[in-house]
Image (cartoon, rainbow, N blue to C red; front, side):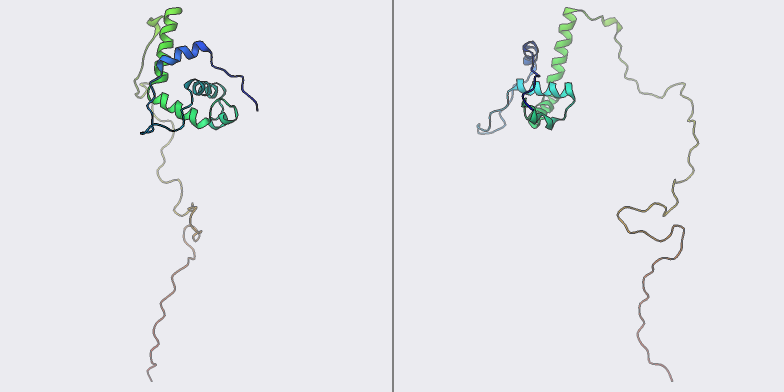
Length: 165
């Protein structure tokens, strides 16, 4: 497929760098494979978010392995890195252009609509299927629904008795 043309701008990387929390070495005695650089992981994450490709498809792009990029994405979402990055971007935009905060509102109310009215459909009075109408997928078919001949357990043979004469 060749090398992708997607690169991360230096300005974006410089803005993102202060938001990253320092990484702790997961190996108790040190060593292990050196971690992938954060910049290449961020470029791969933005590539996925921009193109909508699957994480495993990153392996073919050469940006970063898909599992590494996804692990880093999960870690940065969990520790609030992207939230700090968004907040820093919002503050920078406010300094450059200005945000008119008077038109912001927050609504977190989740109640029934006051003029919602009643339900417009009749309520069922019984089950949707008659008993035995639907067959379970993991069983053999039963007899006909609603009765009919069914298999029965064989009668136990009675011991032979001497015929009274």
